[in-house]
Image 1 (tube, rainbow, N blue to C red):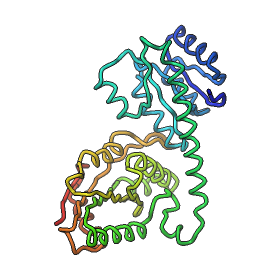
Image 2: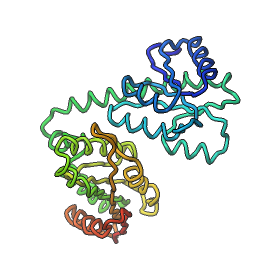
Image 3: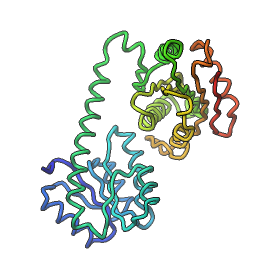
Image 4: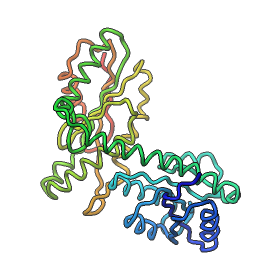
Length: 318
């Protein structure tokens, strides 16, 4: 059954196509359907009122569907919202679709089969959209309900991530696990050197806004069981558990740098581009004995060698 409360925004520069889609969605039971004739107009409408589902043509003048997707994801970060994005496309190539999925698109509708695919795919997106919004709301409620003193002492109040004490405890637990049961883990130190400069230049408000935005983006890029923390005003850290160090595919961690370096952050004062440097330590039982302090010191030294290049520095301990 369609959710009559879900908001749908259709972005298409062809009036005939928009009218066709609007009629089909209205007949399917979706009364809240808006239309935009360009990506720029769509972004302005989303600023005024977010949409649950965005249905856009892949090929549009000035800004295509992939660029629009990137801009919408930036708006989502600001508003703690998730927009389910579907592109209308005549492309069927696997490489094209894989690239689009990697850049944040949720689903596709083939223009050649729009009559058969439109309503079923929007219904599927409707269900997923409802689930995602419910999870976001539950997550906000969960964050607000963290009132225990012990819990608060492990949580960074600005970002909702772990803090330095949380990192120390988790590193200590990982080292104990290595000693007793084996296995492996990766410890990543992520530095954003412009943040202290921005604090001095732009003030506390924008600095806090950027820290929260970085935290949200990192949460989208890591696995649910990874431990993600904010150490200080310019550093984040990540612990990723592995069965064996050989499972540590560097490319899977490089996406963290790409996610921070290749897409600007939207703030109330405009877009801000940042550069992230990453130090990665691969740790297994061969590296023992180690302490959390020693691991952090080695990561700091490794990160310092990244210099201004923004590259990832990697070291396997043991």
